[in-house]
Image 1 (tube, each protein chain N blue to C red):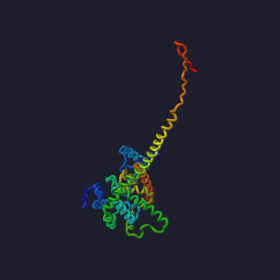
Image 2: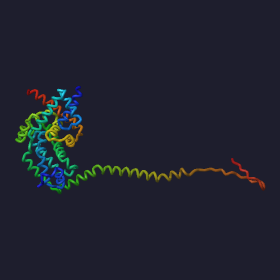
Image 3: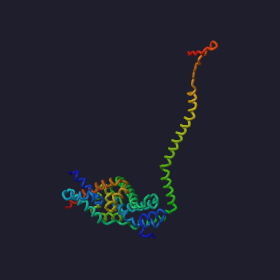
Image 4: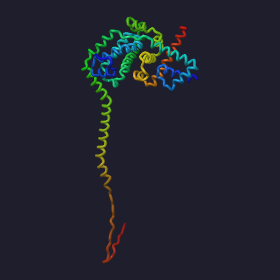
Length: 183
Length: 154
């Protein structure tokens, strides 16, 4: 069993040599954060579970392609993000075909996820553009720095700065709208 | 005035994210003290950030653990080494190989051209170098016993 004192970088080095224990430890460390991120982006528990699974499959297969083991967390989120955005795109085209059915409606886990997300901010996030939502989730929920977000999204740090400002502005606008209505 | 407030809002967003430069902090505080519009933006952004921090994080379902555990069992390290080689070949050869082929072709064509030019060159020079020089020698007339030679140029 791998000791918990090992850093992610050490675990990634072990994973490269095919260590299953290292893979298991990395999964245990990051599964909840990754699942939380995917669930917030998709608002569909079952789909988020699939994406986390597929992301870890990619991590297992392509760990050798990661140049800097220190950037494992960013790399892992970029894999999941790419898949989640594809899923959103696919769902949009699917929704256009069948407007009467919501994704994951019958799945009890999806219902639970939706109930858990009935907080104010989650509802507000649905009111802003998906690109802004993605940045807000990465910053406010997963606590990534601007530099990390730049690595995950492929944007420059300056672009992240500007996009996050616009995202916050859009969110604040939606907030004052709903807040004003309640009062 | 409005433009100035937008600039401050940009700095406020960075301040809330903990990514503002120290130099700009005082500037932001001074502006917040006198601008109500920017103050309400700051309040809204801070409130939303706090709400996000308070929100309960979702945990991965137990079924996912079983599925992910199956990944490492199904894929052996031997298969992984194959992937390493595949990636290595892709990375090492995908860009350099076509570039090397193009360079080799360029060198081949230019080499053949130079060789052809070199073969052609001596024939051309032979034709050019062969000049027709016409020199008319002077006629010398000698008369008498001590007569001086007389040259006549025509």
